[in-house]
Length: 372
Image (cartoon, rainbow, N blue to C red; front, side, top):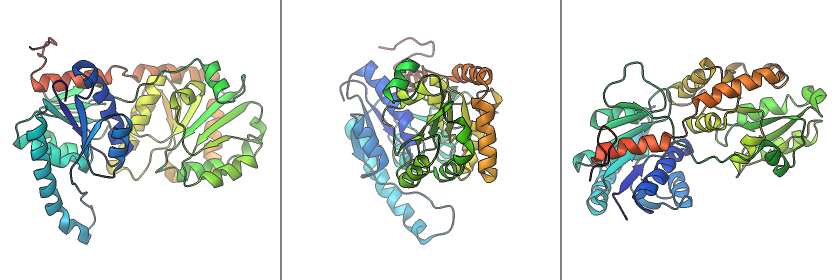
């Protein structure tokens, strides 16, 4: 590590990794390239994402507790003890100034090791309902960085917003041209995610025939994941709307810039990006998210007037069509929702979390001044 070091851990989903990558970039800007590194499971999504972002990666064993009784839970104590030993040795070698935990069971070994090795621990909670790992670790942490204020905050809590990947949006006309879209049509961007896309994909496929009258008025860019790519393409080809269908969109900033409305789940990273982009959304929270946290995330956007929320339990083509017509045919409502979404944006979130890490590590005073 070239300057005061930061070790980040968390994972299991991209939503746990993306915020940490934003903080890693902010830490490296302040303390030198290579100062931040990631800790997680070998062969995991966190390893793939961290290494793609240019971060050093250190493997440490961890395992999830299954909430229903299964025999795999019997092996959990041994796995965690092994991971704890690995994490303590890593801390002794790396000697970081602080540890950041972004959520998920993956970060438990390093977080516990940080307490045992007297390294300041900072937790990052991007959802409106704190996850189990962060609830368990809060007594051990120096600070808890929040996307949303808790009903009963304490002196450890700081509302920083959710860091996310940098978004540099092109001009809308340039974005539409880059995607091969037409001018003068309202654009729906569909981002249900690759892991929880089935219900939204199915409802949209079943809605396309009934939306044939919108051909020439609307256009659709649809990222529905790889698992249902062929089914989505077949439905799109048979429809008058002829949506663009993608398994994955690499340049999401271009897609946001082109969009008038985003149909999506309510994951923390997606909502942070929507706010930064200032985009209105039609949200369908994933009902199986831990502690139903996506519903709470969506409620915060709906309360601000930035989103309309549909429940998956009642999601059918008729309800989806009515919601899309009610929004895409009302430019004034879209403009109002876009403005409210923009007010929720925290472009400084990664810097705010980095401030809290520096305070916990004694690198920055409570008044904001740097400590030599």
